Image (tube, rainbow, N blue to C red; front, side):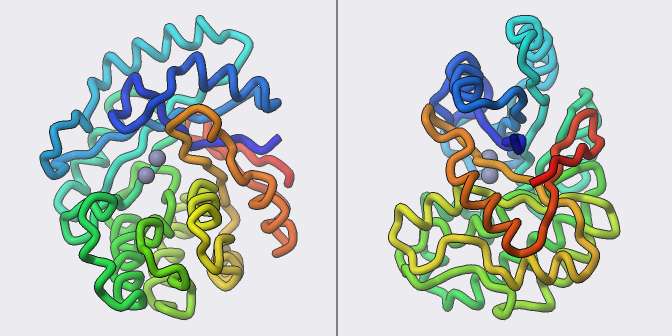
Amino acid sequence: MITDGHNHTKHFSPDAGQSIEELVSEAKSKGFNRIGITEHYEIDYPEDGLNWMFDLNDYDRTFDQWHKEFSDFELLKGIEFGYQTHVAEEIDKTSMLIPFDVVLLSVHLFRGKDFYVERECYEMPAKDLHTEYISMMAEMCEKCDNFNVAAHYDYINRYTDKKDDFVTYDECPKEFDRFFEALISKEKALEINTKSIQKHREGGFSRCLPDAAILNRYREMGGKLITLGSDSHFPGTLAVSFNDAVEYLKSLGFTETVYFKDRKPYFESL
Ligand SMILES: [Zn+2]
Ligand SMILES: [Zn+2]
């Protein structure tokens, strides 16, 4: 079973609607014995009335309780930082304050705006939008050091209503190469976000699996660390589209994925 390394609970992520009990029970019923919990932590996020920065010590203590409560199940203590250029140093410092198993970095904003809420960025040509977004992913991996995974590189395309738009390597090869160069030289992992696959499928997009040219180029440049995450926020969505992602990776010649524990990679055969 491939570990689902990216999940949220309502205890610490303000946009999630599932309890740890619901999540663990679903994981067990789907045959998992380990998952990653990666709650949102957004430094200097645009004011929206929600609390995107939880108390790290409270999180640490809560995990001690969860480890006791679910002694027959492995919960990886993770966090998902939202990257912006001016908070890079703060992310690197914050990620060392308590012992995490895994640290994810993400880009949830485009030019300072949450494109889930404000969608004017989709008026730009898709190629320009995707190029600027992947350039941010590259910058994030260049500027930050204390992380393990670059999450959902394709998040920018989730909320467009243009069903033929899709993040592809050919749109911005230089930016992808910069992104992969930073990931590979720092031994960080590339996440395949299976919620993105599911969202594209549900939305009737003409494509939903990650662009093969992106994954082939990552491997060609020496990228070995691929991790899977469903980014589940609500009951019923853990490990969504996992089988599709696993079969797809195998068809492209990948043989293993990784999850992180105590910030070290552990390999799992596909
Ligand atoms: Zn995210
Ligand atoms: Zn997430």
